[in-house]
Structures are given as structure tokens and as C-alpha cells.
Image (cartoon, rainbow, N blue to C red):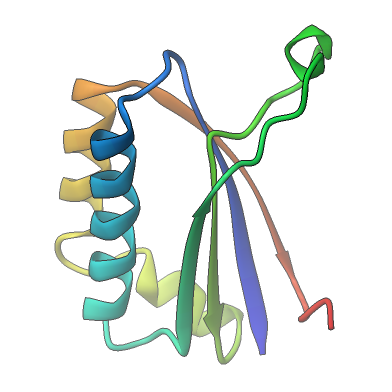
Length: 105
């Protein structure tokens, strides 16, 4: 199994309802591919002072589990995925860092 973990950082703070909708949209579109074993999307838990760190600070974390790297590549070409990403990027720009890795536990 391979986990694809994304650190999503919106350029500007989002209202709670908007962030909830983004997380739901990403989960839905990934599950709709029929290729993923699981999807988990959660909010980042901020701590005081982290904004002073010169790094990408998460707004949310998304983790997708797939069978292997070939399946992961196929998932990212699935219909609808880039439409969801483009729609959110046009409304609320964000950056993403990611890592592909074996399960951590």
C-alpha cells in the first residue's frame, strides 16, 4: 500500500464552511475514482507562534491510500479531479506539498 499525504495551505484564511466544503469535495472526488482504498481529510491544528516559521503551514491534511504507485498515477488522471482542483484554486488559491510513502503505523 502507498499513502499519498498532501499538506494543503490556502493563501488566505477560509471561513469554516468553505474549508469543510473543500475537504468534502476532495474526499468525494477521490473516492469517486474507484481507485482509492481510503481518504482522510482533516483541518490543521494551529499552535501559537507557528506563523513565524518560514515554512509551508498547513490549512488541512489529506491522505489517500492506494494499492501502489501505478494506481496513484491513475487516480490523478480520473475525470472530475482536476475540475475540483481548478474550481477551488480559482476561488481560493492554495499551495500543496506532498509525500508518497508506506503507512506510518
